[in-house]
Structure formats: C-alpha cells, structure tokens
Image 1 (spheres, helix red, strand yellow):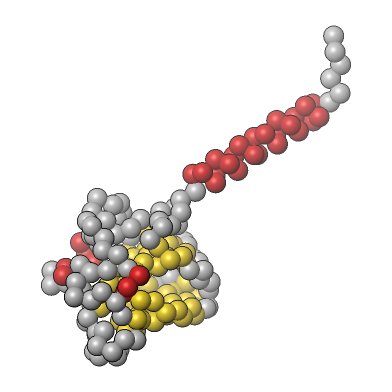
Image 2 (cartoon, rainbow, N blue to C red; image 1 turned 120 degrees about the horizontal axis):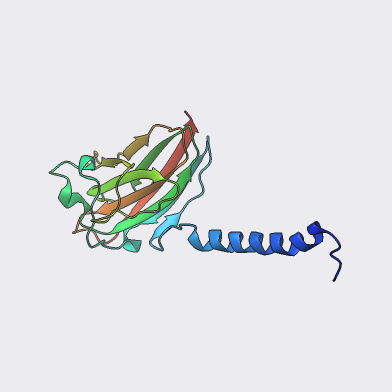
Length: 184
C-alpha cells in the first residue's frame, strides 16, 4: 500500500484548484457596466469634472425610468440622445450631480440619475428591475444654469447611472458634468 506523506500535501493542489475556479467564476459572474456607459471612478470627498457632448449620445428605445421619477409633463424631455455615465459611490456618502450646458442655446436638456445596489448595472429600460432604486430628474433650468440632482448617502455603497439628454431637436451640444461627493 502506498504511503501518504501528509494530508496537507494532498490538499494544496485541491485548494489551489478550488481557489482558481472560484476566482474565474467570480470574474465571469461579476456584473459590469453596459458598453453605452462611460464609467467614472468616484471616491468619498472628491469632485470629478468632465466635458461631454450630446453628439456622442444615442437614442434609447424603450427608455423608462421608475414611474415615481418623472412627472407626466417630463416624458418628452427624455426622447433625444442619451449620454450615460456610471459610478459606484461609497457607503455613507452624499452625491451632488450638476450638468451645465456649454454650447450657446443648449438649454433644452434634461438630466436623470438613479441609484441601485452595487450588484446591478441596469439601464433605464422598460421591463428593467427598478426595485430598490432611487431616482431624481432635473428637466428645467434657466439659461446657463446647471441641472442638479442630489442623493443622500445610504448605509451601503450604491451604483449610480447619470443620463444627459437633449430633446429630439438636439443632435449635439457640449456640457460639463460635475460629480461631487462628501461624507454623509
């Protein structure tokens, strides 16, 4: 009968194989932001400023925010090109999102943002799971004023999707997106 050196020498290859399998499964199963979303890195007590253009946006067939998010008069404001951004905000962190038009005459834009658990990266589509989401919109602003939405910090980290949209008459136009965070 063959002699076994030790249990640990037999277990090491098995433990390594299980570790590799679990790591590979996690990488495959880990949710990711859809390709349409510009992914930002946002920490606590930071501000990110970046420029965007509606020319980079796309129309989203079947667009639908949670019903509690939009007024009945706001529906048409979200029919144009959507430029999408996504980020994860740490737990206990307040977020302020401001979008300021930079092109002359670009005042007919709308901004929406919604948060969801970090295991989801859902786009605002009909039939999407809107459970456990919080949503805010900013549709009307005075000329050259920022469209602003705010989220209070929650106990858990959250994913946030931000959409900047021009109405159907807008095919381009520059804007500045500012995301500011602070400890709750």
